[in-house]
Length: 161
Image (cartoon, rainbow, N blue to C red; front, side):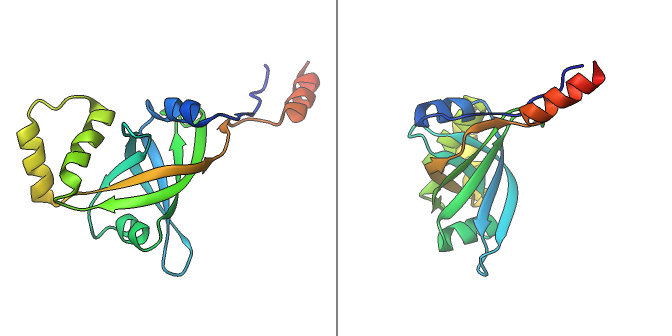
């Protein structure tokens, strides 16, 4: 049985955003005050301006950290844990109510399409005092898949033959 070989594919910004758009499982990494990473599993999307967007609350560590230090990293995962992924570094902007309201509508649209009642959704976002983190990509790694290095897979396959 052939082994899975790890792969990487370097992409430009357009290809990166095309890869990210259908994927909504993110790991958002912000920096704590002491410089150590804070990792948050989040649902995310890509807005119409090519920014990665995440909904949160004002007091959450990710929002507080991103406001203090806007340098963040997002790891975008495929639905299948063994699928392709990419790391995106960027600059974060945190929006709070009432400034976040329209941006939260855009966030919902890029993840789940149209809401059946936008007035209800907006009222819920205001009641919950939601915030939004927008990340402008500044650099990114290649789109990668896990597996064995090619030479190791070949040796293992030869051993099994």
